[in-house]
Length: 405
Image (cartoon, rainbow, N blue to C red; front, side):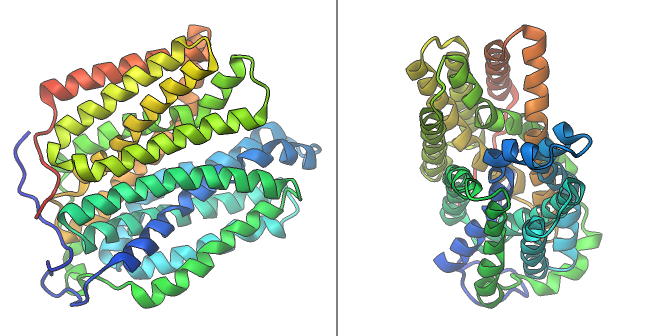
């Protein structure tokens, strides 16, 4: 690949026509908090799926509709993120973000009053579309507001906080679900609280350039490779998030607390990998991708051959540390060098491919497990695929350095 001259907007770097205010930690905190909303949508309902099966046992197709309540948002994030990026470039990031946060609260809490499983499934479609806009706008605004080491810091923080939030939301979902299957849906109202400071403390970074967005094409030669790798990276990232509990159960563990502890340890490893991105960014995209896929290959291989719980957890820690590095590396590779007018669409395309990977993860690994005869062999096959990706990165990987302007 060609070496790319990187540009960006951040503290002390003002795009022509941009707001003169300087973003700080408050803006970053709001955007990182907003980025947790898709995580909330992905994991909050997992603990109450059996309860939903019981509550709607008389509904035709309940065996399909209940899992769909969990996975539909991810599918619609994947489908609508590119459109959200186009709207963000054309209309403005903040305006779309505020509207999406309010829509998220409305659709997310709708099951508190809905009485049919079909209507709940439809409300989850609305949640997914809102999540597409939230994730795209929050990530785009981080890349708009910050540059250099600050951008790397907050992109790493975004992944770290999301990983920790997944653990917290899973626990909250289980605790609230013990009260009633409806109770966890109250947590979706948090977006209506977060949006209030967003209205007053966020701003459009370059209002005067939005009118040219439609005439500025997306550089597919630049965004295509990161998007393709992100599709595979999304499967790698979510593989153990989805399947580690099954691995631990397959080793003879029935204690839900121990299974939850294993998932929490893996989440902490993801967070540690994300934190390290800020300090490792100077190594460059190729080296970071090689590190991430290498750790994932080793970790997944360990999990696949583990005969004991400690070895499985050790493998999950290694793999999760790699995926913690992987996500901010892929995002930085995708968006660095994009002009302001392209950044919303570029981020939307990247977000869409990541969530396609999330949606495909149980399908791909489920099919692989059926073909290979066990989930362990399927995870081992994914580890081999990561090793192949590592080799491909070393042979023809990008030479672009993360932004330090």
